Length: 603
Ligand code: PEP
Ligand code: MG
Image 1 (cartoon, helix red, strand yellow):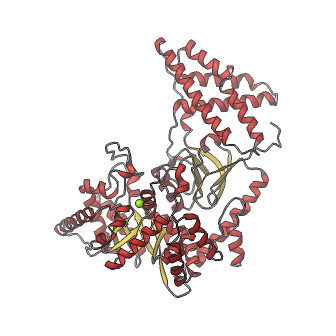
Image 2 (cartoon, rainbow, N blue to C red; image 1 turned 180 degrees about the horizontal axis):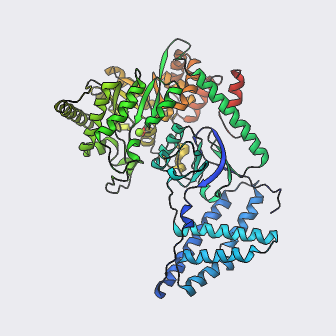
Image 3 (spheres, rainbow, N blue to C red; image 1 turned 45 degrees about the vertical axis):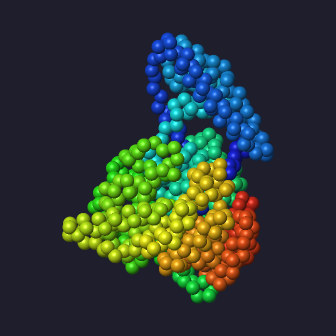
């Protein structure tokens, strides 16, 4: 390959968390490839071993073909290289000789492949013909691709990574993502993942750029490749050219300037032009996030997802351990409020030490309050810890995934039992705290009036409400395009919750990711919401939007919106009406959010 030839590859994914980072790639799933064990194969298993090798070659080849298919037309220089690689999968030197080695040495396929690729390397070591050198590196890369399928992707412990890198993984579970050390990991990219998956939520809370759902990042990116991750547009660039690198360094700088400007402004309250004040709360997963909650001037914590305290342990935490953490948050946030949600595990957040029976549809299974009502021992521990923490600050209790009235009545019985136990144990606690219900299942929307008689407040969880009502797995990138908060069905559901809540005088907040996207704010305001909870990084920009709105205007606009039947019509209406208020929509050609806003505000 000529020196001047571009090696730049651009891949489009889904924006997981905004911002730009530039650095070296670190592939999480490929680590196991380096540790290959040798073992002998008896004669009758030789064919089985050869088939295993052939199977891995087929899978690697199929994956490779998919990359070629997905390649943009204007990237023909890469097409040549990739097509050369495709032919190499069945190359005699690699394919034929690995099979011979399995037969002759009676060894496992991994060992045979490793042996052959090392021989190839050694053979060409002394040759200094650039063409032959590059052919060796092609063969080695192809053999590594096969090896990955042979050994199966093995996970590394993310917390053990000790270099400043960008993670590239097939998938990152919320547990993986919560191990990310901010001083080491600049950002991350995954093959899987859809909008508002928990992995993306964590990336947002860590304030690191992330792109999800790339599909083939782990196959296209090699360790130590230079990567640009543009979390705002959902684009990654592998081995960028100098010009691209320069352009993105500039964009990164401007974006950071803009964020700094918003953060400075954020300490002013969120009051509309017609003088109405809104509460902007933060969603947190870890106690450590309180620093960012304060930096972004949140009015309190609207959602504390407590399951992340459980994910990094090897056992269930004790009442004392939970109490200490909750108390810390309550005290740090005083005089502001902290809404502590009880454990929402299963679904996509599974505790390794609490493996229940396998579920075909975990999102519809023993998740959240359903799990807690089954394991009342664990539930009462949480409630007691929360009631005790409530003696040290303004605490509210929130129950996730309530789907029927019976559940909340059951919860109330457990709360009464927790109160009795705490009294007997003579512990300091506060039993007079507001009890809230997450509205995130369609049945809860329909029953909101009845549920409202049992609850002090509602918190609308649009992440799950969209998932369950539109039947879209929030982690599935194949259906991510259908995951639309401004879907008329979603808006009508929110409207109906607001009406039901009004009848019972129940306060309503919204804590799904929807509340952190500027375009949704005029709509939510028009629907009557007065409290928005979001990842704390979004607070400054949302405050800026609220300050430019007139709530009376938003109400009349929503009346019009509720007569519309499609997302496109609704989005167009909002974007048209609020064109001057909403930040510029980001995309590859028009990546001007920072530039425009900074210029507009004279930074
Ligand atoms: C929601 O479903 O909108 C929500 C806030 O809860 P989670 O994202 O933790 O499921
Ligand atoms: Mg939820």
